[in-house]
View (spheres, helix red, strand yellow):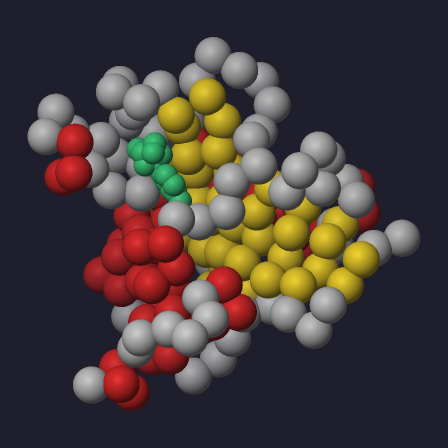
Amino acid sequence: MTTSTDNFKVYRNFAELEGEFQILIKKAEEALKTSYSPYSGFTVGAALELTDGSFILGANQENASYPAGLCAERVALFQKGAVAPNQKIKALAVVAKRREEKNYRSAGPCGMCRQVMLEFEQAQAQDMKVLFKGDGETWILSHSSSALLPFSFGKDNL
Ligand code: THU
C-alpha cells in the first residue's frame, strides 16, 4: 500500500519502489562513495536519470572555506549542464548518511538545490521527478521539482 497526493507518492519501503527507481537509488549510493566531506562527516550522493537512459552522478564536495562547498544534487546537475546540455532529466535521486552510520537518513534536498532543480526543470519544459528518503523505511517521490518549491522565484519572474 502507498500513500499518494497529487504531487507526492510515499512508498512504505525500498521494495515497493518501481525497478527504475530502485536502480536510480543504487546509482546515488554509488555516487555517495565519492563524497568529499571531511568537515561535516555527512555523505550525500545524487544520481540523475536522463531521457536517453544514461546516468549522471554527483556527491557533496566540501572545502576548508565552508560556504565554498557544494551539495551532491548541484554537483550532479551542473555536471549534466556541462556534459549533456541537450538531454532532459527524468528523475533525480538523493541518498544521505553520516559517514560512520550504515542507514540512510531522512533527507530531502536543501533549499538552494531545490532552486537549481527548478531552473533545470523549467529549462527542459518537462517534469523532473525527485526521490529521497522519508522517515523510517519510507521513500518519497515528488512528481516534479516545482512541487518541492511552492511560490518560487524563477526566470519567468524576471
Ligand atoms: N548536503 C548535500 O549534499 N545535499 C543537501 O541537499 C543537503 C546537504 C551536504 C552539504 C554538506 O557537504 C553536508 O551535506 C552537510 O550539510
